[in-house]
Length: 139
View (spheres, rainbow, N blue to C red):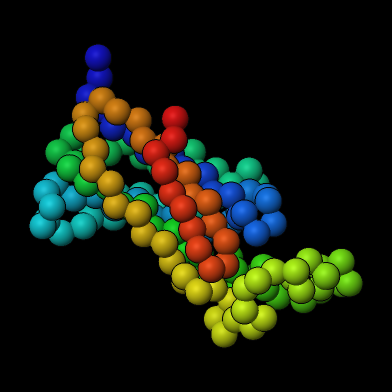
């Protein structure tokens, strides 16, 4: 049995029911609860919203942190929705969310911290929309 710890993630934009492409993902690690974070890897989600190329974690890792750069994604989505035409406007009018967004995203980034154990794989999906998110340990 190997003690290697691996991490993968994917992001689904639940406001449009599609994978979120092009979101920057940073992986950081620390050796204890109060230790400093060290950036260990970075990537971006692919067309399927997945990030499969994050490096295995160092052997002494106690906690991992995934930081998702959601602000630029929603800024781009907001500008793109302005060009969608009548169908896009009707869908937006049906939303209960506020009509305007100052920055394009209420959450400019999402950071998820989790404890790790040797030999485990951690798949951490992010379900995202402009005004909320949910995360869980997947398989």
